[in-house]
Length: 163
Image (cartoon, rainbow, N blue to C red; front, side, top):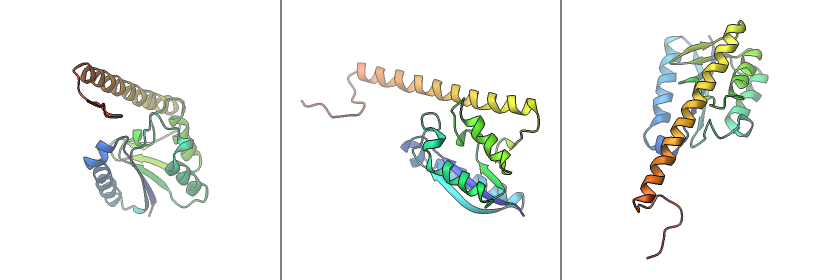
């Protein structure tokens, strides 16, 4: 039976409030059960951007790496691979690090992440390059909307104006 550690991550408080973590948790638990795996530990990162925060600054990733070095688990399971991160010049190497340390990396929605050959390595990079692009597009949409709201005289956060 495979020993599994799960990682759940959401970037914003709004996602926590909308039950994204419970949705990820339920999906991972069902996936593990279908495969006859045992979840030993679950890591949650609330309000942690996988686009803005480096893996070296994320406690959950560092704890997972330490546990991998001690051979405490066999599988890192996530809802989607972008839960590991969205930094295109970092996250592919984080995933590769786990695989090189004997940890299978699985996504409920995307299956096992393999690094068996050169094409797998390319696909690994493309996956996180695409996730990075999605984060950039989301950021642009949010900034545009906040600017529009400000131009309309709406309060968009920060110190409340007097008067």
